[in-house]
Length: 480
Image 1 (cartoon, rainbow, N blue to C red):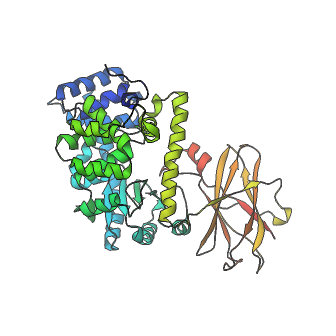
Image 2: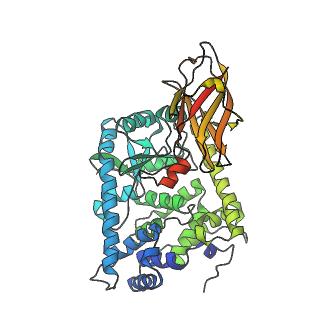
Image 3: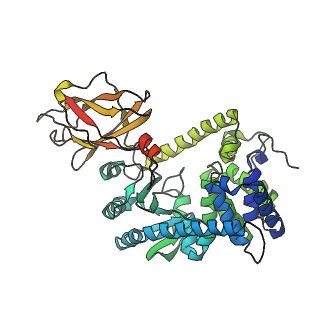
């Protein structure tokens, strides 16, 4: 029996029903995998299965068709497989026209994660869910990509304007674009979060990638070792939110597709050796996947204690719902540490010009001289010619829940600033104000306030999400 006590790697490994489903989908020993699937079915109510569990269940079900394994729940499982396969097909079909448009515009695209497997074999959709398309683009193509997406009706899920995204530049890792009713594309300016696009680990992926036809477009697909590295780098810091990547990695190892010296070289560059050790030790020790022993031991952190990077790997790998209050707090601390590194890379990529958000403060009253204008998502600020400094008042209306509000200040052709107001009360009238100084080269008669969503909204948001995150019609007043 392996010890699961902190800070051993076993402490972070999957547990309970999730461990059973991973074994059912990834364990090379088919008899043991079949037993794991039966055990999961005995212990779990289908109605309580999460989406993450359904994804793994699809992998296991496709692995064990009726000819290999008879189970009473086969009808319901096949229904889930058909439903998720249909959703994947619909999502890819929605992305097809814009991918073709990007190819026609001369944009070089690298597909990663589930889209990479789909590009290699569309038949894999029945065994692997791909509800979105992850595209990596060159930084120099960012403006063209924005133009093509906007012309095709794709919008960022957090509701930012194209003017804001242009001002943001390529200083981000990923942006999610959606198009009703089923379109979902993630645009990345680099593969890995914690290194820049010019890092040798990034450059090498593009150089080793092969070109494939995908949905009528020309795309690049990373080589197997790079797909393996990408899966580990992203999956090991996500609290096992989705564990498909473990199945992908296990199958690539068993197929003998991994160039281990290349992987270890990139693990050093990306500083993910502790993360890789937890994952590969789990695959070797628990799933009995054929990971070379010298690779597992070579990745093991030196010394009795794991060090800061090793602790980060432990807390970020462990499943989200397995944390205690204390370890959950530690996880949040290490997550912030990880996010700081990502932001530092974003700032370097954007040349330090990343757009900042200014905080508004609560106002006691709304200027009476503003009149009784109707609330709207876009309001023109009535400034006198030549004015460059003013106090902006915003009336968000009657508050229903405590929430954040976001605004953009734009001209007709340029983004100027982003504003945030946090309404802690969640009741009464939500009024805010801020002092603004306009750049000298801005026409003060061409200033508009745009109300924006407070966070990502799905293509079909629930009423509760709209209430908490949706853009709110506002009234504005400017006092000079």
